[in-house]
Amino acid sequence: MFAQLVESGLVDPQAKEIWRDLMAPVNYFFRHEVAEKVREQGREEGVERERAAMVLRILTWREIEVPESVRERVAACTDLEQLNVWAERAMRVADAAGLFEGDEA
Image 1 (cartoon, rainbow, N blue to C red):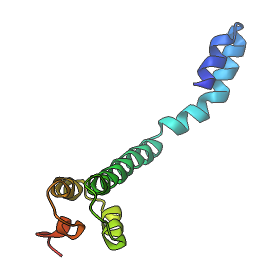
Image 2 (cartoon, one colour; image 1 turned 180 degrees about the horizontal axis):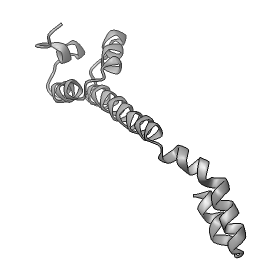
Image 3 (cartoon, one colour; image 1 turned 180 degrees about the vertical axis):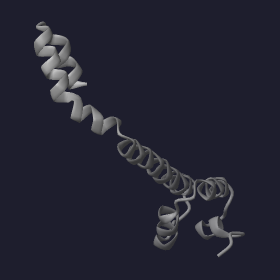
């Protein structure tokens, strides 16, 4: 974005051309497929972390005590479908251990 701002402020066509040449490697890095995969992976991990946090928040809102072992298991989970199941269960369980009832070990 900064590079585009600088380019828009350049009046001399030759200066614009030099600036574009200088910025080409920077733009290439951010548009490279490896960089895009890293960004996508980061987005997925962010969704997983937020979903795990939601499961724990539901239990907290319901004033259910959450042992550290439950926190660790929920936080370590990277399966969004499993986290969704736990979020639904968190709305009905009597205690935090109830999240895992019915799960395969």
